[in-house]
Image 1 (spheres, rainbow over the protein chains, first blue to last red):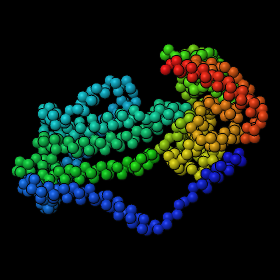
Image 2: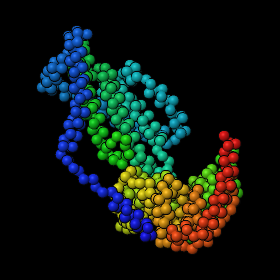
Image 3: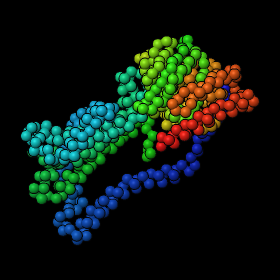
Image 4: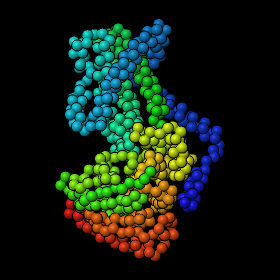
Length: 282
Length: 263
């Protein structure tokens, strides 16, 4: 008893707060460092772009200058066209990810929790996962027409197969010890699912969403091959038929920026929801 | 809150063609502290899993106050070597986990009182809001103990609970466990590979043979509770420890031969 208390006291006093000396310079250096890390890769990319344009390897007419693209961005912003395209594409991506992962989450739990179901369904999933969505477009037009539902189907297809594999691989690796503990405390199957499996699956669900989001943005141009009037993919295709390279560049950059923004938002949400995770790189 | 009697009656377990346990009978009487020692692979963990309800014996019966054991239940608390502390819950939410389940539903204020009581008893009060990833192994095992005690099990089943801890922490945990036993006595079945741990904590030690696991010997530990560290220096304790280690080492050698043949 007495020894237990002594050791306990030792625990409480053994962690003195480290005092921050020279707090200002250290934080300034750290701030400058993170600003550099943030800016440097983009600056390098821009430099490469300009370098290629002036290298003489490619005709300058085939590589628009960053300023020309910026000019296009400005005029498209002013006319409101860019926001229209962006909104149409973002809505399609959001719908595709929502439908695809809404289907992938239950399927992922089913496969992840049961080796039998996994053995049964795994070959099918790997079969469909290998199919490029663009190859399915003729069939999708036959069955879904050329409306909005056809485009969203392509995106949902891509989102489903990208996220379901992340989900069931992650859920399949949940350590059984937590389920055992819950059982010994008297938890029912339903309680085990809601209070143990689900919290442990949450990081995997969020990772699956991130993967789905990336793949869906990557599939967007293909989906908008289906008679799209608006959307960033449609904008790129129209520009392609008029050989407007600067607009094509603008479309590509817009897709990248939109995907990056949504991924950033999802990463922030993950960090907030799963603070408990022991990360290698917090 | 009366203690219960756990009875394993002539139990055998086969895993495929391999016999893990062979005609083992064990009687854990209310308030008794029994340790099971034996070489690794001798089936002592299987024995504990039968009591916990995770393994059904191939032959024989496992009963709790006469009723057959079917599956795990909150009246038999289990402490695992790997703690199993829920990483997404704070220390206090870990302790409250069992109390929020339908099987042991409590009023919120009663629950808080129970959680506070075990936070204090386990020396966890100042870590109440901490997440498990910030805790040491010893602290995690305290959380697991508190979580188990909170649902008021009558039997405690411990599977090498201190095996992953360093020697000093293990000693502290031994005294914590003895202290808890003095305050709220439970029947305890402890699986360990440490002869000293078994003798220091328990009232009876069961030595198991190499595979297939049989009970080779039982030693009644004559020292009265409450016990403290001075017992470790007692000549009778040292004598008993030597005796027990010899028994275990014989079986350890036999198990080594078995494993070599298997490879």
